[in-house]
Length: 185
Image 1 (cartoon, rainbow, N blue to C red):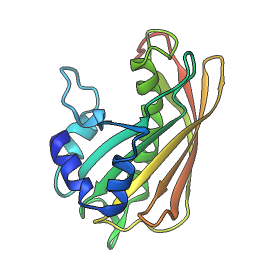
Image 2 (cartoon, rainbow, N blue to C red):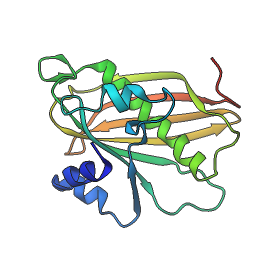
Image 3 (tube, helix red, strand yellow):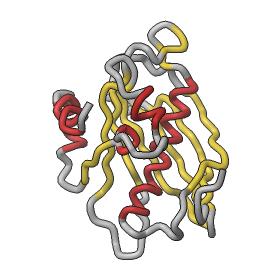
Image 4 (cartoon, rainbow, N blue to C red):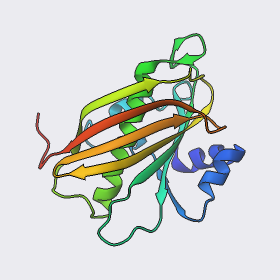
């Protein structure tokens, strides 16, 4: 799917359209779905980029941030397909953890792109604690909201939630990311 196709689909869902058309929000592609010359993000841009898995996805954040401050919140709208189930018509918990981790990581992509993240490297997940609150049905669109809660040296703490179209919190996570100077294997 292209970014334009994702936007077109998500605008057909009333509650998503309100999020997308909020004048304070900037809308971007879900960059993990973009093919890259390296093997980076192949799980999202190949394996999970189908009509049966993650059908559509975009990311958003507030347009204006004061000089020198981090973008502290990133949102994603994601339409889930029917082949992500762990139980009948229920999304597998491991995939939900993956989505929480990925959207949390967008905080650092956005800040790095805006020149607000230190170093040349990456922020990597040190831990991710997930709480599953309600079953997440397949064949629906979810809102994922990640918030940067604290920055201490190289440590970045993030809370993230998966919500349905009615605003119900279905799953949430607390994560610690650590900034690295460069990619290490």
